[in-house]
Structure formats: C-alpha cells, structure tokens
Picture 1 (cartoon, one colour):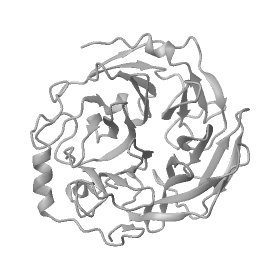
Picture 2: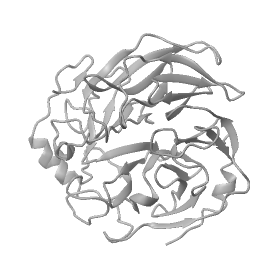
Picture 3: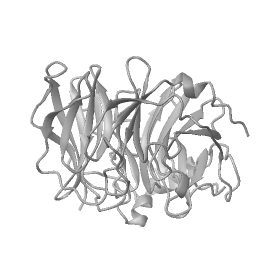
Picture 4: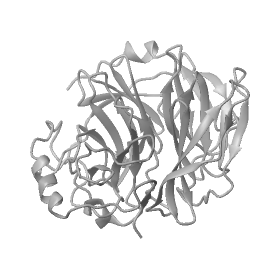
Length: 373
C-alpha cells in the first residue's frame, strides 16, 4: 500500500529517475578508510566530572526537542509526550492512545517549528507523521488534536527509522527504515529505506530531487539521527546490519548503497559514509551539532561519540559504558549537552533512576576531542 500524503494522496515517481539518481552518486565524498577498516576513534575517560542529572524515571524515552526553551520528550511504549520542568519532573502533555508499540515501533521522533509539534509514530496501518498545534506556557503546555500529514509508511518490529528534524530551509525531514524489506531501499516507488523532505504543511516541496515524491535520499537501512552544520551540510547516522554502522553526509537524490553495500564500499555507484564503526561499538542514534562538533548518542556502544567537523573522518568516545544505552542528544539554551539514556527499552540494563536525562558541559569534551588520522 502506498503512503498517503495530506493534500497530495498520490505519489508519482518516474522509474527513469532511478538512472538519474545513480548519476548523482558519482561525486561521493572522500572515503575515510578502506572497506574493511574501522574509522579512527579514541576512548577518553570522563568519569570525572560526573554528568548532572536533569530528569529521571522516564519510560523508554526516544526523542527530545526544545520548544520555546521547554524540553519535550516522547516515550515510545506509553505513547506519552511529556514536558520536563525546571525541577526535572515530567508532566504529561498528551497520550496518543492509538500508538501501537512493539519491538522498535511506537512513539518515536519529535520536531518543533513554531507553532507546530510533529510526531512520528506507529499506528495499525503503518508508521505516520502527525502535526499538532502547541500552545500554553512552560508547565502548562497543550497540544491540539493531531492532523496526520503522512501515513501508511513501512513499519515492522524493526527498522522503523523515526527521526524528525526541521532543516535550515524550514522543511520537515524524516528518516524511514526499510522495515526489514531490504529491497525497498532501492525502490523509488517505496518510502522504505529513505530520508524524506516535506513542507510543514505536509506537502512535497517543488525542489525535491524526485518530482512529486517526498524522497530526499535513498539506499538507507535504518537511518536515525539528522543534523546540519552551519554551512548547511546535512549529516545522518545509520544502523548497519552486522558489520558497519555509519555517519553519512546527505545530498539530495543520492544513493547510499543499502542493501548492496554496508559501510565503505568504494563503489562509484553509491555514496560512502565519512565514518564507519563496528556495530558492537556504535548503533548511532540521535545526533546534534554545536560549536563545530558533532555529537552522537550510541545505543549498543553505550557511549557518546564526538566528531570535529574540521576533521570529520575521526572521532573521540566519552562516557563509555558509564550510563548504558544513549538514545538522543541535544543542546540546551545555556549551551549544555543534554543526553538521553535508553535502558528501559527492553534491550538495556536499567540502573537506578532510569531512564534519565544527563547534563554535560561541552567544554569538558571539546577540549579533549583531538584525535587525528
């Protein structure tokens, strides 16, 4: 069943575009390593100073977003959207009772563009993107009845994608996993294994790379985090299968190789990642960029990875194993890193107070992110 776009129920994609997309992939970014090598990464002991606790007792949290300087968090299994007050208490704004949770599905990504809050979640007929109007002051935020702007996206117990972000062009970007159907990533008639680009009204922008389609890039397995550098460069983290997880630079219309390749392939038909890591040390989820550094929250790897944009083929690792699985990372209005743990999602080992939001001064990390090739 084809996904439905609000105001544009039919997605028209010409098969001839696929050949054009292959041509677009010819100018791939410089690969950091040979196909069989892990990107340079150095672990740094950051047990002192200890991160401060912002909030605790969250249930399988998935995404964080700041709206008018108030932090809003999604809980995957409960379907709750909560705001975090100055004391670290979670107050429920709304519960989406029709969210279907199971495996990796449920209430996933959030994004905010005044006055709208966007949410990516799993429903009976697949994944969807909904838009709410946000009103009220901090401590008393309210959400309107949702308007579904994109529905019937591929869904499964695995590979749902689910990240939402507002780009510097004020467009809404969404990551969609292949939902276990590997071939969908190369099929431009499917939205599985793609990064999508929509207007905030849920329409297809006229300057998208494939006319009439929300597809922005394809050939993805399970893309997770999205962030932009000040120069407009778009980065995305991605879960690999059993060999390599990836950090990619995303270009419109580009093909990132799944399922033909995982990690760096040095194949001119596809874009290579700028970094790759073993799946045991990574599972890169939410990402953010602040002051020239890209921060990556890692689930299976249980670490916060930093990448200096001036040396994007290297990284440094912090908090390795200290706080369990890390799902998301954001920067507060005061410039503090807020890191979301994810130990109550059925795959982690919950610690006292989990799940938590941790506050870390970026200066304690930036001053020591000095790994070089």
